[in-house]
Image (cartoon, rainbow, N blue to C red; front, side, top):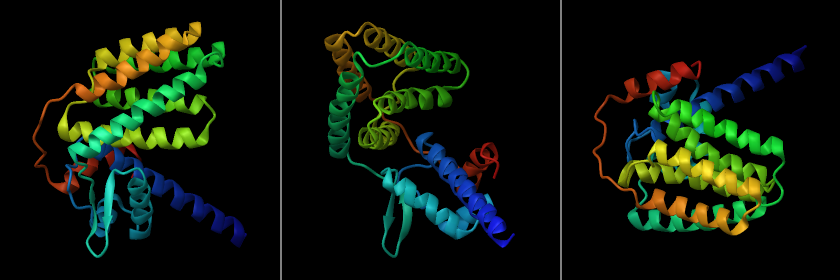
Length: 238
């Protein structure tokens, strides 16, 4: 009985930690939390109704993805990558995602092609009335491609780079147009479906290059920190 109760409590803590992680990640990638914003464990815990331990676990995951910085004796804050960091990250991402495409050529099943097409249809549906969801789905498309390689190392690095790229674009540019993302993703799926290795790799390189070069500087939000998290927290059930 005690063991069952302990297991339930552990699962509940993990579930809450995941929800806090998703809440903060979305707030960062949606640019609601600006670069350099302090992330005090006590304030976040109080706002989201969880313990500091659970908040600390979520912050550790975000730190691992490069979305926040954990500074000794100063606490956490949203990361502030430099333009040089941005160039390095996009260069590595272009190489890794070209490798993803090269790995998938001739290996995707009809069911996996349909899975990719369904994902892009969801992108297309979201772009007219939910820009935030459309941008998130566009990034998740790249993560899905990496997952289909069944290479866990490749998946881990692509996932991290996609997250870092979204943060960089929030600082120094604008996320790529949903229209462009949808059309470019569809072209890539078609090349993968036909087994056109050279075309697929070329499309991916062009796609990442296009994301890199679409720039538009913007200002930061001035909203109150607790208010910024409220909407995200509600969607995560906190």
